[in-house]
Image (tube, rainbow, N blue to C red; front, side, top):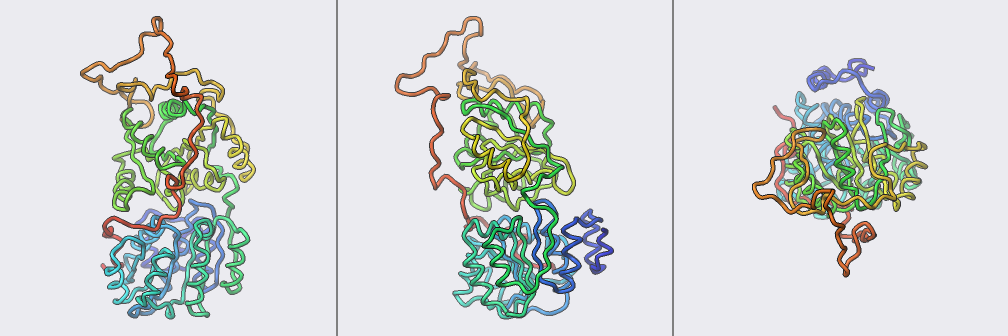
Length: 464
């Protein structure tokens, strides 16, 4: 269905056309007309289906009629993470450029004084994470009695992060007569209970469950061992035609170490994880979007809500512990009708995690031919050797080898003369050691802090 046939205003259609879009996705074609008819909505759609625009576009036209009042936002969008909130704000700025609407973003870490000033002027749309919103509300800096449109985005993620009590509390402070839109990739019992309690005769629109296979994404398992994971990953990066890729790890320390390892091998790699302040995260994402780097090593903080066009590959350096995370990770590629490839490195200890993923998706992921068999631990770990890597590339995929260093690094003797290295007596060989259990402070859990400066595009509304 074309956007011109959905009933949007000419100004909005102009902005959509300038953004390069013409056809609405299934979730947009289903949701937008019902929102314009003021219906409550339950939208169930997997990531990458255009879900954000499905509520942003009709909201812009609805809010075009009316005037904002001080401290009383006219609409509220709740997002689980600051990255997702920032993405929603980008959508409002892009599509609302021909509407004189004001916007405020409430996220932890930003100077509260600046946010209060924006609210005092009055805003048409308030985009917030639950923690900061409740903080300002309890300080008496915001009133929700004039909010007639509520959007709860990524509801299942809200559940994972423990925000459901906050959302229930927020809903009780809004007008009883309002329009409510709830979006979720899945509909577990707590989310259904939330919808039953706070939505009025909602229309359910479902285009695809995240547990279903995305036909645009080719998925593969690559058998390897803990000792050889970095070698296997580099072999894949060399063999594949990489445009841009995201590599996911379970631990923040693994993200940092793997990014540095890839940089030593002359890959244009960056990193993003929960220990980085927000200004550093934004800078790294900007480098990735601009093509300054083409490989982004990430923890699960980036798995949901991150929307970067043209990601050709996703690599799971670590098999995710939760099967839902697998769906959201690989959903960074194969978006908006594009094709993508996803590889998951699989060691013997990952059997249970892979089984759970395949049960959730109902798809038996094929084994890829690249990568050492899981039982093979005899291969030396190139990344543990001293000196420069044996090869390097400026981009993922094949390229020129790295320049030789001025001083020859220490290297093993030629194969014909090499003597087997003796392992240290006080330490097991790397291939025989089990990975250390993850510490809680090394995992990327809920993270609502913002320690960097406020990005310019998030601070104001759409006035030309």
